[in-house]
Length: 552
Image 1 (cartoon, rainbow, N blue to C red):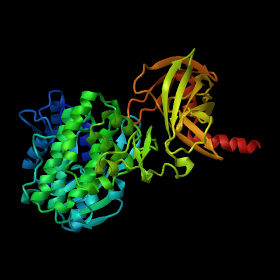
Image 2 (cartoon, rainbow, N blue to C red):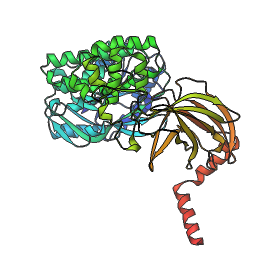
Image 3 (cartoon, helix red, strand yellow):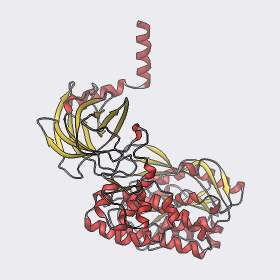
């Protein structure tokens, strides 16, 4: 048999439905001299039959079935490495794909210069909405060859093993295999590959298509999306400790701060957005696992984080679980704390008192947020719904409390507006915010969702109302945070002749905004939307423009 140039391993477990798509992407590669190994982690569904059928269709496909389930990705990859015949190796998950030129592009980079591995861009595709993005685009923007990870430690953020093509000789020389019996094996394997490689090449071409299901059922979610499990937290921290030990053993302790920053900015950050929705028992266990490890991280790694993330970390380390929930709701958005306290020198700190420790004063210092001086349009306010009362039909009465810790609003009542845009036309509902105490205002707004002006074909989607403030001719729009839990309110309404089912609910993730969902029903869904979709196409729009211009 002709020796293949590249062996691509497809690992699979109980994924008979998507396995053919993954293998088809390999059979369609522009570089055809490849070996395809389907490594089955002892599936119990129809995967064996599907895999054997795929092997029968193409002589390049081999089927390997593990004698028992390993419970992870490492064992099926390692068993495939053992039987791989090619000098270069790649890995593919059964729910993903390789772009047509992936093998050709990475192999060409190997042949251009002898390196230990080559890597390229990863395209992420959201399964729920089809949105496409590039994973860590700033790291793969240009073609370059690096003599070791020290040349650009930022690459530690790109810890995927599937975006790379490895020289088999490199893996064998260092006895480098995927660690078995643990989760997040990619992070350790990639850290070791980066640390051991004498040289590797980065290309900007896409070499992997990664399908993301962020809201998959928890029972079938990927390991990364099982953050609700305390065992998941323990697994992630365990892998970080293994990486730390490797850096010491390999004589590269200077990488520790970069690696710690990556952990805080990426790994911890993945949990942080979920913290407002965790109960006290879960948060206490989370702190018990996380805090001892946080205490080992380099201070320089904390200093590189945005201030709101440092606040959440410090509150967790102090055991202030209510404060953690409160602070985490603003991550990624200009959301103010409810309260700020200044010391004798005027330094503002998060919360109702000046921190008692040096670390607390360093981490909770909000000076760099410029609460009192930043431009009004980007100022920090906090808008929370403190009362929600359904009315007749699709009407709501909301009690809104606004926190202004920078005292940017003048004394006295404030004119505000509630903004909502379920189509191309915005609905603005004016209301008044009355002062409660310095820096705190409260008001009621009546929102009648039937007043939203919808397009003829209706509107299908989700919108999050915003609060608009004005000051000296300048405007500011901010998030409206909902109570973390309240029963979903549903009503059927007709607006502008279009019938919809409207659901009002808390967002349930991230900052937890008030969320309003429109779903066309009846004639609107069955007739109007399909007709408008057929008409609203580029060719039809262009024809319409030609006709209207000729009639002028």
